[in-house]
Length: 116
Length: 111
Image 1 (cartoon, rainbow over the protein chains, first blue to last red):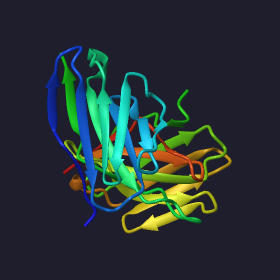
Image 2: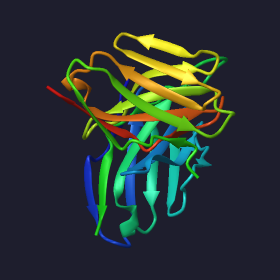
Image 3: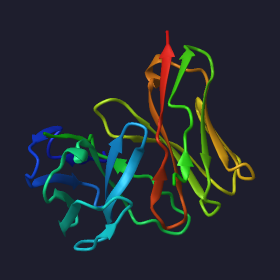
Image 4: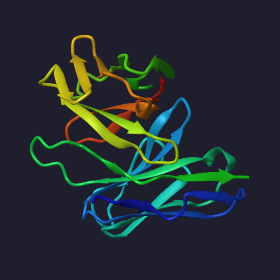
Protein backbone atom coordinates (compact mmCIF):
# COMPACT_ATOMS: atom_id res chain seq x y z
CA UNK A 1 0.00 0.00 0.00
CA UNK A 2 1.25 3.42 -0.99
CA UNK A 3 2.49 5.51 1.91
CA UNK A 4 3.75 9.06 2.36
CA UNK A 5 4.51 10.06 5.92
CA UNK A 6 5.29 13.44 7.40
CA UNK A 7 7.28 13.83 10.60
CA UNK A 8 4.79 15.94 12.52
CA UNK A 9 1.04 16.50 12.35
CA UNK A 10 1.16 19.72 14.36
CA UNK A 11 4.06 22.07 14.98
CA UNK A 12 4.30 25.39 16.82
CA UNK A 13 7.38 27.52 16.30
CA UNK A 14 8.47 31.07 17.10
CA UNK A 15 9.30 33.79 14.60
CA UNK A 16 12.91 33.54 13.47
CA UNK A 17 13.33 29.86 14.27
CA UNK A 18 14.70 27.43 11.70
CA UNK A 19 12.08 24.79 10.95
CA UNK A 20 12.52 21.38 9.34
CA UNK A 21 9.58 19.46 7.87
CA UNK A 22 10.37 15.90 6.88
CA UNK A 23 8.62 13.70 4.33
CA UNK A 24 9.27 10.04 3.59
CA UNK A 25 7.72 7.87 0.86
CA UNK A 26 8.03 4.11 0.53
CA UNK A 27 7.01 3.77 -3.13
CA UNK A 28 10.42 4.33 -4.74
CA UNK A 29 9.02 7.39 -6.54
CA UNK A 30 11.44 9.68 -8.34
CA UNK A 31 9.37 12.83 -7.89
CA UNK A 32 8.50 14.56 -4.65
CA UNK A 33 6.68 17.81 -3.96
CA UNK A 34 6.02 20.28 -1.17
CA UNK A 35 2.82 22.33 -1.16
CA UNK A 36 1.16 24.65 1.25
CA UNK A 37 -2.60 24.81 1.58
CA UNK A 38 -4.33 28.02 2.61
CA UNK A 39 -8.06 28.81 2.67
CA UNK A 40 -9.23 30.31 -0.59
CA UNK A 41 -5.89 29.64 -2.28
CA UNK A 42 -5.88 25.87 -2.59
CA UNK A 43 -2.59 24.02 -2.90
CA UNK A 44 0.40 26.04 -4.02
CA UNK A 45 3.65 24.39 -5.04
CA UNK A 46 6.70 25.47 -3.05
CA UNK A 47 9.44 23.18 -4.38
CA UNK A 48 9.71 19.86 -6.14
CA UNK A 49 12.42 17.33 -6.83
CA UNK A 50 12.61 14.87 -9.72
CA UNK A 51 15.67 13.01 -8.50
CA UNK A 52 18.08 12.74 -5.61
CA UNK A 53 19.95 16.00 -5.04
CA UNK A 54 17.84 17.72 -7.70
CA UNK A 55 15.37 20.47 -6.89
CA UNK A 56 13.22 22.94 -8.76
CA UNK A 57 11.40 26.02 -7.53
CA UNK A 58 7.65 25.96 -7.57
CA UNK A 59 5.33 28.93 -7.54
CA UNK A 60 6.12 30.27 -4.05
CA UNK A 61 9.70 29.30 -3.07
CA UNK A 62 10.57 32.50 -1.21
CA UNK A 63 11.50 31.85 2.41
CA UNK A 64 11.91 28.11 1.85
CA UNK A 65 14.62 25.69 0.86
CA UNK A 66 14.64 21.93 0.37
CA UNK A 67 16.95 18.97 0.65
CA UNK A 68 16.82 15.58 -1.06
CA UNK A 69 19.81 13.47 -0.05
CA UNK A 70 18.00 10.15 -0.41
CA UNK A 71 15.32 9.07 -2.86
CA UNK A 72 12.74 8.37 -0.20
CA UNK A 73 13.17 11.57 1.82
CA UNK A 74 12.38 15.18 0.94
CA UNK A 75 12.84 17.89 3.53
CA UNK A 76 11.38 21.39 3.57
CA UNK A 77 13.32 24.02 5.48
CA UNK A 78 12.10 27.36 6.70
CA UNK A 79 15.33 29.26 7.26
CA UNK A 80 13.76 31.91 9.51
CA UNK A 81 10.10 31.24 10.20
CA UNK A 82 7.67 34.12 9.89
CA UNK A 83 4.00 34.41 10.85
CA UNK A 84 2.92 34.43 7.20
CA UNK A 85 4.31 30.91 6.91
CA UNK A 86 1.60 29.62 9.24
CA UNK A 87 -0.13 27.07 7.05
CA UNK A 88 -0.86 23.44 6.29
CA UNK A 89 2.13 21.85 4.55
CA UNK A 90 1.56 18.85 2.32
CA UNK A 91 4.16 16.54 0.85
CA UNK A 92 3.44 14.40 -2.20
CA UNK A 93 5.23 11.92 -4.43
CA UNK A 94 4.67 10.30 -7.80
CA UNK A 95 6.59 8.11 -10.24
CA UNK A 96 8.06 9.55 -13.41
CA UNK A 97 5.40 9.96 -16.11
CA UNK A 98 6.12 7.74 -19.09
CA UNK A 99 4.29 8.10 -22.39
CA UNK A 100 0.65 8.89 -21.72
CA UNK A 101 0.86 8.20 -18.03
CA UNK A 102 -1.05 10.17 -15.46
CA UNK A 103 0.11 12.57 -12.78
CA UNK A 104 -1.54 10.95 -9.80
CA UNK A 105 0.28 12.29 -6.81
CA UNK A 106 0.17 10.57 -3.44
CA UNK A 107 -0.09 12.91 -0.50
CA UNK A 108 0.99 12.69 3.11
CA UNK A 109 -1.41 13.67 5.91
CA UNK A 110 0.00 17.18 6.22
CA UNK A 111 1.74 19.22 8.92
CA UNK A 112 -0.17 22.10 10.46
CA UNK A 113 2.53 24.68 11.25
CA UNK A 114 1.80 27.67 13.45
CA UNK A 115 4.41 30.41 13.71
CA UNK A 116 3.94 32.71 16.70
CA UNK B 1 -3.11 34.91 -11.84
CA UNK B 2 -5.07 31.76 -11.06
CA UNK B 3 -5.00 29.37 -13.99
CA UNK B 4 -7.47 26.98 -12.35
CA UNK B 5 -10.54 28.43 -10.69
CA UNK B 6 -13.20 26.88 -8.53
CA UNK B 7 -15.62 29.74 -8.08
CA UNK B 8 -17.90 28.07 -5.54
CA UNK B 9 -16.23 27.93 -2.11
CA UNK B 10 -18.92 25.62 -0.80
CA UNK B 11 -21.87 23.48 -1.85
CA UNK B 12 -24.59 21.86 0.22
CA UNK B 13 -26.59 18.93 -1.14
CA UNK B 14 -29.19 16.55 0.23
CA UNK B 15 -28.23 12.90 0.51
CA UNK B 16 -29.28 10.94 -2.58
CA UNK B 17 -29.28 13.99 -4.87
CA UNK B 18 -26.67 14.98 -7.43
CA UNK B 19 -23.64 17.07 -6.49
CA UNK B 20 -22.07 19.12 -9.28
CA UNK B 21 -18.71 20.74 -8.67
CA UNK B 22 -17.36 23.12 -11.28
CA UNK B 23 -13.90 24.15 -12.39
CA UNK B 24 -12.68 26.63 -15.01
CA UNK B 25 -9.20 26.99 -16.44
CA UNK B 26 -7.42 29.57 -18.56
CA UNK B 27 -4.37 27.74 -19.95
CA UNK B 28 -5.26 26.09 -23.26
CA UNK B 29 -2.10 23.98 -23.03
CA UNK B 30 -3.50 21.95 -20.14
CA UNK B 31 -4.08 18.42 -21.40
CA UNK B 32 -4.88 16.46 -18.27
CA UNK B 33 -7.30 17.18 -15.47
CA UNK B 34 -7.78 15.56 -12.08
CA UNK B 35 -10.05 15.78 -9.07
CA UNK B 36 -8.75 15.20 -5.57
CA UNK B 37 -10.79 14.80 -2.40
CA UNK B 38 -9.55 15.90 1.00
CA UNK B 39 -10.94 15.08 4.42
CA UNK B 40 -9.94 17.17 7.45
CA UNK B 41 -6.57 16.17 8.94
CA UNK B 42 -5.76 14.00 5.90
CA UNK B 43 -3.86 14.58 2.69
CA UNK B 44 -5.74 14.85 -0.62
CA UNK B 45 -6.50 11.57 -2.37
CA UNK B 46 -6.92 11.09 -6.08
CA UNK B 47 -10.53 10.67 -7.16
CA UNK B 48 -10.87 10.72 -10.94
CA UNK B 49 -9.11 12.16 -13.98
CA UNK B 50 -9.72 12.95 -17.64
CA UNK B 51 -7.48 13.46 -20.62
CA UNK B 52 -8.10 16.33 -23.01
CA UNK B 53 -8.85 13.84 -25.80
CA UNK B 54 -12.02 12.80 -23.96
CA UNK B 55 -15.10 14.68 -22.88
CA UNK B 56 -16.34 12.30 -20.22
CA UNK B 57 -14.91 9.80 -17.77
CA UNK B 58 -16.95 7.74 -15.36
CA UNK B 59 -16.02 5.76 -12.26
CA UNK B 60 -18.91 4.44 -10.25
CA UNK B 61 -20.84 7.35 -8.74
CA UNK B 62 -18.31 9.87 -10.04
CA UNK B 63 -18.30 11.34 -13.55
CA UNK B 64 -16.07 14.11 -14.84
CA UNK B 65 -17.10 16.13 -17.90
CA UNK B 66 -14.71 18.25 -19.93
CA UNK B 67 -15.74 21.07 -22.26
CA UNK B 68 -12.53 22.19 -23.94
CA UNK B 69 -14.08 25.00 -25.93
CA UNK B 70 -15.42 26.53 -22.73
CA UNK B 71 -12.32 25.58 -20.73
CA UNK B 72 -14.62 24.08 -18.15
CA UNK B 73 -14.87 20.80 -16.32
CA UNK B 74 -17.30 19.49 -13.80
CA UNK B 75 -17.50 16.62 -11.35
CA UNK B 76 -20.87 14.91 -10.86
CA UNK B 77 -21.54 12.71 -7.86
CA UNK B 78 -24.69 10.62 -8.09
CA UNK B 79 -26.14 9.75 -5.66
CA UNK B 80 -24.44 11.89 -3.06
CA UNK B 81 -23.67 10.29 0.29
CA UNK B 82 -22.76 11.83 3.66
CA UNK B 83 -19.29 10.27 3.36
CA UNK B 84 -18.71 12.42 0.27
CA UNK B 85 -18.56 15.51 2.49
CA UNK B 86 -15.03 16.82 1.95
CA UNK B 87 -13.04 19.47 0.13
CA UNK B 88 -12.73 18.80 -3.59
CA UNK B 89 -9.78 20.18 -5.53
CA UNK B 90 -9.66 20.47 -9.28
CA UNK B 91 -6.16 20.22 -10.79
CA UNK B 92 -4.75 20.59 -14.30
CA UNK B 93 -1.49 19.71 -15.97
CA UNK B 94 0.37 20.44 -19.15
CA UNK B 95 2.09 17.19 -20.14
CA UNK B 96 5.30 16.63 -18.20
CA UNK B 97 4.79 19.75 -16.16
CA UNK B 98 3.58 20.34 -12.65
CA UNK B 99 0.00 20.21 -11.39
CA UNK B 100 -1.90 23.45 -10.88
CA UNK B 101 -4.65 23.29 -8.27
CA UNK B 102 -7.81 25.27 -7.78
CA UNK B 103 -8.81 26.76 -4.44
CA UNK B 104 -11.17 23.91 -3.59
CA UNK B 105 -14.89 23.52 -2.97
CA UNK B 106 -16.27 22.32 0.36
CA UNK B 107 -19.05 19.81 -0.24
CA UNK B 108 -21.52 19.10 2.55
CA UNK B 109 -23.97 16.25 2.01
CA UNK B 110 -26.85 16.42 4.46
CA UNK B 111 -28.63 13.28 5.59
